[in-house]
Length: 483
Ligand code: BGP
Image (tube, rainbow, N blue to C red):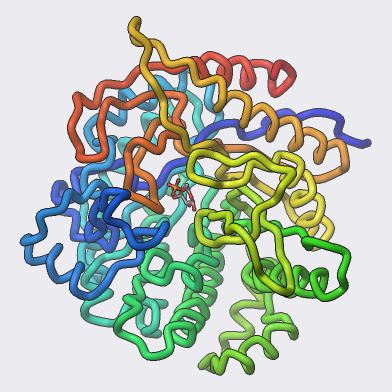
């Protein structure tokens, strides 16, 4: 029978990443991570939109400790010490699910050790126990934009095949440890990021490679294999595990009905679907060969790789959705930025304060297309509005703009469910204000819960409820009936 509303057991909640919330970067035996190297650069001094792709020089300064900059991802919002208070607030909102990531260098400080760091493992035991206490399902990413810095400096990060083994060992360690506490996993956050923002996605420092695309796509192949091996190991350790892939979805419309525009849009769509084609279908699609040839990219595969990819595909497909783009065969006009990508401005859409084009209907389109293509459960694991919040005199925050954004997207998700799409859950990005990945800002806030901290790291870190807190609480309580 057609599902006309949100299914029972729908995973409502919010999503975070260790490097954007935890802090305590040098506590509990944690090693330095790639994210710990990323400084906050004020807007006036920035050269691009994205500040996460950094240079060898910046890494050197950060490691030697002689940079005058503030490093926001080292401190996050200090979830490491506030997790009990934060989880209690999430539970008050009625969360069914909480997406978070494990910080790899908290478990393996250097990344290449055989023995894990017990203090790191114990921290996540505590977090999972706390979530379980309130009946909140943890949704855990193994890798969300961070890796031990040692693996970058010593091995060249994901360009090196050895990373596959290190990652597999890390995955097996946490799967075995948390097999009775966690059911839902995902391997690499926004796996397409490695080709768009190589440092962020794969620890690849662009100035160290002559042909960065070659390095990135080779690194990506290693991530594909590592992800499939993790799926294999996870299913062996607990057959009930649900292990997914995660894509930054980049829906784009052809600017006109000129066949050249339509073709260009199709080609861009293939380049976005390439990642999930491999992880859901289990093989490299034929269209990618031409792209590799034109870009002079050669993927080195080992015997057995194709079989690994084929035999260990993911259980579900999760993705982030923030904006859409427009594609033209002859690029022109004003650019509309996005989290990893920029396109042409769409005259029918409004934009966020950061220029991201807001497109709720695009979410319904994307859900339909993804389900047509793959026929596996879909999970929206990131969606939300980054905005500057103003605190009223009485301390309240009237974030109606955020409610409006989320409501419109949830309405369209519901329409997609009516269309017959199998959607398993929705976790809004940044339920508690956190550090922005693209700009390292604190003032780009997504939360239902406000955190008192500014871009330079000053503030009490006190948590308070915004208007959207009460709105989302109602949405979850009524399983999406009251929006
Ligand atoms: C996604 C990342 C998240 C998150 C989000 C919002 O690409 O997976 O980690 O931060 O984008 O982006 P930003 O923080 O730049 O606003």
